Length: 390
Image (cartoon, rainbow, N blue to C red; front, side):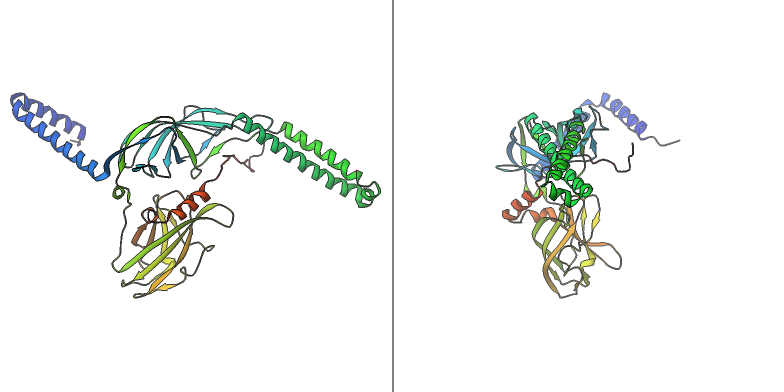
């Protein structure tokens, strides 16, 4: 006979009901005692997680998030559901009320296709609840839109059109110079260049009139800022409850004293630079090539060649101490990371130091600098596919 867990639970429940029909007092004691145990466990969990204080998520609050999948105005439709993840803790005066890693549920409520005169498409997102890492579901009202205010949108279009016209004028003047020659330009006291610029300007203006705006694309890693439209009372977390799990190897002491977010040589904010101190009193030898940053998706990022490379090629033998910096280029700077050292022979992780835990001890000056460099105005522009030939 095939094992069926659902049938097994049904039979057990049925037998319990039969038994309780003749032993009501006994069963009442059992169920009552079971409820008391559950209440005690629930209270113990509450005591471990929260301080007992209450703060309010206010209407003025902004929650920084990143989406978990691509949202594309040319593909997605109104009503499509998605999930996003909170990338920065939300704090009140008494402490953290929404931790990093909280998941938000959202829907696309409105969208519009791009139009002529350079008017871009847009997406409007609504959020209705949060799921915290400890499993609580918090109802909220949140909203985010890529739609510009009409005045701002008009100003943006005007600026772009001027750019088109100026570019057209520059191209027109260049063509006149090439077609008629420098001698003609001198003889006519520059009127050929002016005429060419006028033609080019007209071409540029025509381009501005017929060009179409772009579609919107919000991708994982893009930061979205969600405006809260409701007030919600929330418990304050204990700092110990927000600490990430770590793993240590006997004798290998690693201290992270500073964490900076930086741009790579191409201008992307995707580099994490750590100032670390290593005391190796273990039985193993390490080098910079034996360490990596590992995120919560288990993606591994080795030291970047664009940062300080002294540690990368240095041997840290038993008894050695070292202080220096090391940089890692990552795919999403907002994820959780662990500085991980590996056994070079077995390839297994020996120690894992949480970057989030270390970041709590970083100076406020560094945190403000990092926040400033990470804060960027994203236009969510969907680039045209060069291989998509119409």
